[in-house]
Image (cartoon, rainbow, N blue to C red; front, side):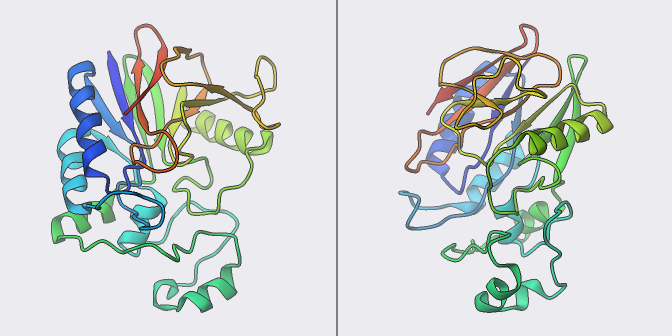
Length: 254
């Protein structure tokens, strides 16, 4: 069995079409790890189409989890978060009021354009889970947009630490997951996290091993990975194929 993994589409319809076209030929199932929406004009060099991107993900991906930008698009608060407690009236507050309360703890989406979603797509985003467990070819896989307890990626991105990796591993163990997959980082290839420093080539003193596009990465028990973004930006975009028979994960450029 081969599964395709996509994440961080950010309303880029052109690249989403490219990714799905390739994965439909190569894979038995496709998983989306969130941030279908979330367009910032000064960061993305394309015309956004949130509704069409959501439709394609709905129709082509069996497993989908919500990302932080998806939550913002439907003004929904995250359930899993540790460092910040949202006021119930959060989305009725001004940006200045939000900044005063939250500081730099969470994303405030200051330059983001809210998409004009149709009713079907809005309701679908509102119902997406922050994580999903699936059993595939005898392996239990955990899918989320980012690490526990920040599963949606709503907290601002900080350095990966052994503590952060350990927390996600503990959550995997609690759920009985063999492996886990996240998006959110827009990595130019695959980032692999492991329970200890043994065997890891550190990236900027963080407990991660980096593998470039087209490089095959062996999947062993308890590993978890972050994958590239589909959206075009100042980083290389791509998608991932996970061969469960060979236990190999490979990122490919778009």
